[in-house]
Length: 192
Image 1: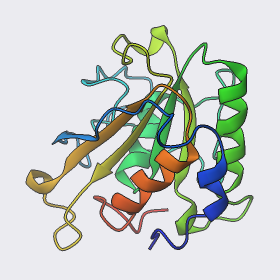
Image 2: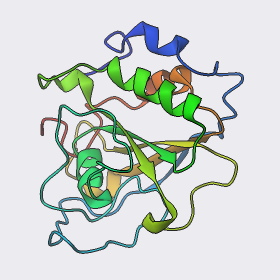
Image 3: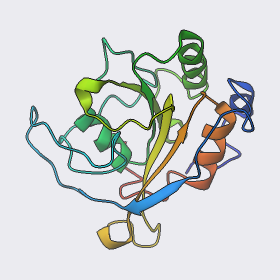
Image 4: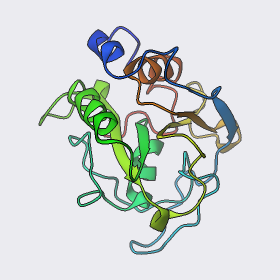
């Protein structure tokens, strides 16, 4: 189980401070799509976008890769499956300034390497207009999680999509978000 003590403390020093990140308050809403697998290649219309829950492909994205560029990003529907398994997915706007993308790459590197580790459930991935409209205006990253009651994780009525949009990439904001919404509080926390 990941907790605040297992998140690399150096993450808080990467990018903007919490005060300068321009983050909206965390928003929660009813989650959808628990164990709702769609055929690979099916385009799922998500609401809100970028997604924090929803129908998804049967196979998640690789568990040991923590940063994606537009050229190598898996399908959104695969990344939503990662959310179901307790990942924090930070979506960054296509066209985000390169310095902020570099900060996201540095943050992603704090989450481990080639070996799978349950404490490293973090992915940064780009969101483009081709993926769908609705990226929050003026924000360059949206931190997302799919939460559940750890005492009854498979109960869809207790699941929530959680999100926080930020103007600037902030390791401090990501650290705080991940501490508040740990891996254990997800629909399938033990899934790789």
